Image (cartoon, rainbow over all chains, first blue to last red; front, side):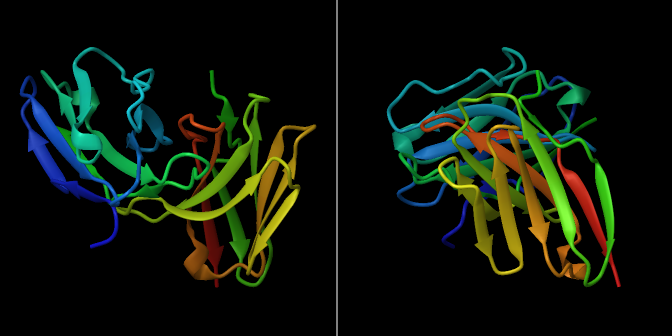
Length: 114
Length: 111
């Protein structure tokens, strides 16, 4: 499809395990964002990639969280040693970048840490 | 420090009436503002945006107003429809930076 694709759509993991969440942005979009939404909360910024610039990691809540964007396209968000408070919907978005700031979101990955 | 604030967590409106969703921001460097709509179990979808050089942008039933001096923007939906029931997020940004979202307002439009 032409939209932002995220996988898996749902993930249940045991506390302490590592998880990887994948995002396929819209082709040609140079900007990629990761957000998360906890139950009843707003959209919390995690990390932002823009072209070849160093990513803005200011939103990552702890050093257990990391993200990569390979070849300026696919991104992976990794959470190490998951905790129950990591349970949330993780949303990826992409935009053309530059003067265009309209971001298109994927369906999200619902992460449940048990 | 919440740079983008949506002080009303919820709003109930009757079908056919006007819905007004409000958003305040603190960072005077923001120069582009967006509204997103989110249904349960779906990602947010872009609704309408406005640049800081304008004070109004209209798209069908949706109009966004920007008051830069007050650092305030609002989304008007006229007339409201039951299908508009969703959570609405306000977002702000500066060029080349990440989107900063508010906490959302849940709109319920009753028939």
